[in-house]
Image (tube, rainbow, N blue to C red):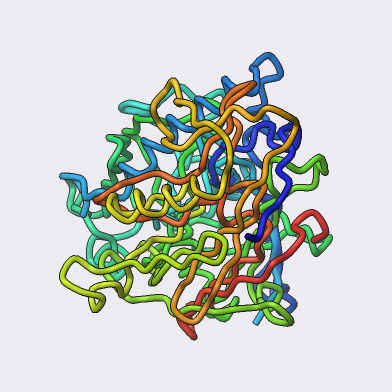
Length: 445
C-alpha cells in the first residue's frame, strides 16, 4: 500500500476553492513575445483582501464547503443561459481565486473572480439599475476615453449567447446567469484591459478587449470584488481573446493551502505556460457543449494498488468527456455509484473508526488519534495520463478533530476540483487540444 503521513497541522485551512483575482496592468501585445504571468492569491491567504483573521479554521472550511455546493450548481443549465510569456497572481474568493486587473483609460483597478467555468469578462458599471454591494468605486464607462459599446450587428454580439438589442437599436445587450441564481445584465463593450505581469516591469495592455459592463447584477458575489474574469473555452473569454498572442496556451500551479510557504499561485500565458519535461503527462480536451467548459475523460481511479474502472451509462463507450476540470470547485465529484466503490476502497486502507461530518457534506471522515494518519495513494487515470494526487489535499480537516475525504458523490456533474489539482502544474493547450499535468512544488515557481 502506497501511503503518506498526513500531518493534521499541515492541513489547516485546506478546504477552500479556486478562483482568480486579476491585479491589473497590461503593456502592448508586442511585449507578450516572452509570455507573461500573474499571481493567484487564495481567499484565505493573509495576502488576500478577503482574509478574516477572526475566523477559525473550521469556520473557513465550513464556508468553503458550502461554496462548493453552490459552485456545482454553476455547471447545471440555468433557464437564462444556456508564443508569449505572461503570468498573473490569483487570489481565491467565495471558493475561487481572484485576479487584479485594470480596465479603461485612465486605468481603474478591479478585483474579479478568475473563472475557468465561464467566458465573459464582466464588471459592475455605473449607472446601476441594481448592483450588489461593492466596496471599491464602481467603474464609470463615461470616464474612460477608450470605452466603446458594441453594435448589435457585430460579430462580437452574435458570438455571445443570450444577447439582445438596446431599445434604440444601436448597442448590444448581454445577459449571463449561473446555476446558483447569480446574474449580470448590461452593455457589451470594448475597452483597454490591463494586467500586471510578474515577469516584466511593464504591465500588459490589451486594447479593444470585449467586456460586459453590468448595470443589473446580483448573486453570490463579495463586496470587495467586481464581477468575473472568464477563462473558459468560449469566444469572448480572456483566454480566447488572447489566443493568437499566447498561442492558445495558459497554465496554473496551485499552492496547497496546507503549505506554510506564503508564496502565491501563478497563472501563466503563452510560451511561459508550456508544460513539459520529466513526469509530464497529457490528456485530450474533448469538444462538447457548452464550449465554455473544459471536458476530459476519466477512465479510472486507483486507491493504493486497486484500480477502479468507471463505466458509461450504457457501457464504457460513454466515458469520453465525462469530467469537467475546474479551478473554481473545491472538492472532486464522482458519479454516485462509482463514488461508493471509491470510498469503500479508501476506507479499506485506513485502520481507524469512521466518524460523521456534522454538516453531512463529506461522507468519509475520521478522528485521528495522533498527529498523523496513513493516507492511501490516490491516482486519477485520465485517457493517456495517470495523475497521482497530492496526499495533503485528498483529505481535508473540516474542524479541530475531523479529517474527511475531499471527494463527493454527484450523479449529475463530475468535476476534477482544485484541491486535487494542487501541487500540479496544469497546462492547457487550446491549439493541440490537450491538458497536461506535471508534479510540481508550486511554491518554487
